[in-house]
Length: 231
Image (cartoon, rainbow, N blue to C red):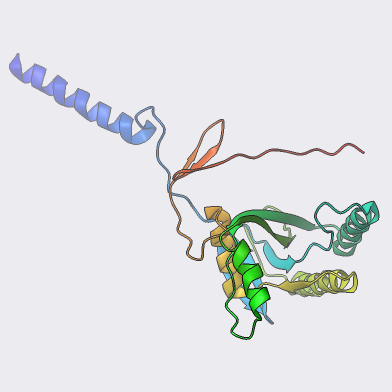
């Protein structure tokens, strides 16, 4: 009798172990964050991001020419028309992502021995004060058809390089200060994007926790709001 009880107990333990291995414990299983980017390479000074799905992107950093609190409404319309022209230049099969980043910083006085006394006193007066800085990035991605097999298409690659340079020239001709990020800068941009940190010189990653309300990254909370414009 004792032998039968022992065999049944062993069978139950084995069954529970198999169930936990196959289906988990019923709670939320921790997952390691997988980077969506395959690699970052450089092509003629342009940092190109290759994704695991076979797409590639280039990132431009630009200065938004529209001044903050500007009363000239024509500037806003001209900037919108510029991006409409950019979308037409790229055509079908491309995606653009414009990202405006607003950062709270403390003003730091830049040391200059040749600066006059009044200028030094002026900047020292604002030293340490909080202000809002902004950065603007434009990511251009050439999309590919979703498939299990990926093959390099030299024609599409050349088309990508030609069109992103055309976009660069369009922005420059419109009076926008613009430049491509190189490989090192793209790597830093990606790290800062995932860490949601465009302020500190040194960036470190932490654990992600996602729920129905927000995305938690250490002691930081991130919320996403969709803004839909009505024309």
